[in-house]
Image (cartoon, rainbow over all chains, first blue to last red; front, top):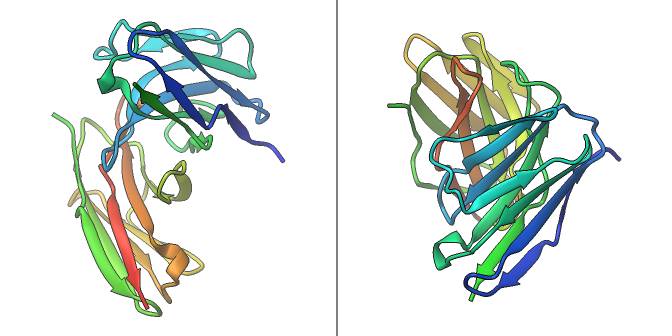
Length: 114
Length: 109
């Protein structure tokens, strides 16, 4: 089945210790997104790639970086996690970026910062 | 600013019907999405509306009025598994998806 896969499902890190979350997709979609979602809040878009073109949201902290080495994989690097970065991190893909393009989500990685 | 409003929480009874409302103010409009999100899981796509009117898909229907900046999601014959958060999201003129905070729906037997 075509899908969006995120690993790991749960990640525990220490305050200030770099962490990388990974996402892969078998849908062959052009666009990949990273969202941060805290409890009972809307998903917050951090950045997205249209193919290799990187698009950073204006209010995404510099602490968050991303890499997309190929069509299938995308990584979220948090350079120095703080307690406020504990959240669910959702990866999503869409075939294109037009109006009717549905975003398909992976199962998410829940990050805990100790 | 851009804004999506939906009730924080709703309660309904198994077998009944519930309507979840969403109002929006965005810079432009390129469609409205409804997603279902079970606790601790990722959102899953339910429906997309870009023209006024009702779209029916099994037990779920979604309605849009662009002139009123209003949509609702109608769930019929509620089942316990429908207990989840329902997120409304609008695609703006820049093709950015603006998300609501979601409505937590609690189904009681």
